[in-house]
Length: 69
Image 1 (cartoon, helix red, strand yellow):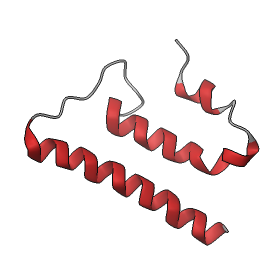
Image 2: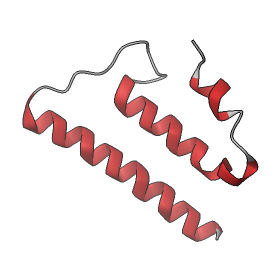
Image 3: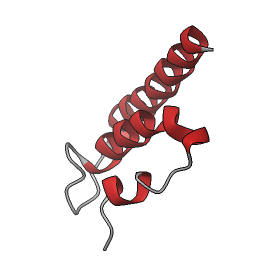
Image 4: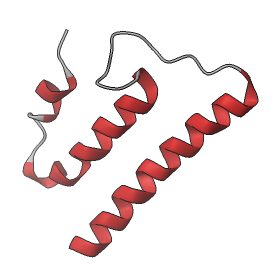
């Protein structure tokens, strides 16, 4: 199975800015470093925490892109 680093290495230059976002989303969904299991979020509070982390990751990537662009 391909590691995320192998996959994002194939991204075209056009998508260079989303590599960091992809890594951050991997960590949110699968744990630090993309361990081979899915993190478990139990209950609404835990799921909301995951969603907030994902929204924050996207917002950070958007803000970074605005500063560059």
